[in-house]
Length: 59
Image (tube, rainbow, N blue to C red; front, side):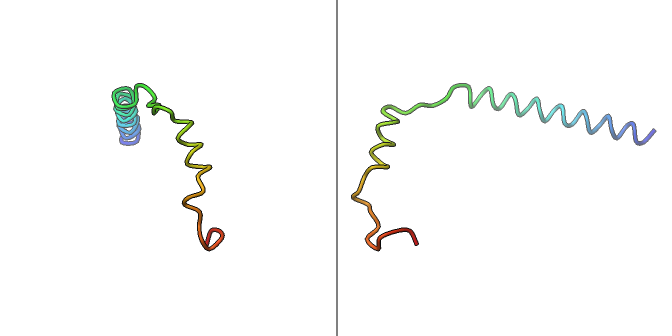
């Protein structure tokens, strides 16, 4: 009797947690946030040579 009650409680808690996580995902992450000129900003950052390491490479 104890083991079946424990299994039922564990399954119930897991279902509640999944429901809470799904609702949080739907509330806060409903749409992707795409910045303006995102790819242009990334290209500028990657190709920028002003911040080059003066020692010649990564440490």
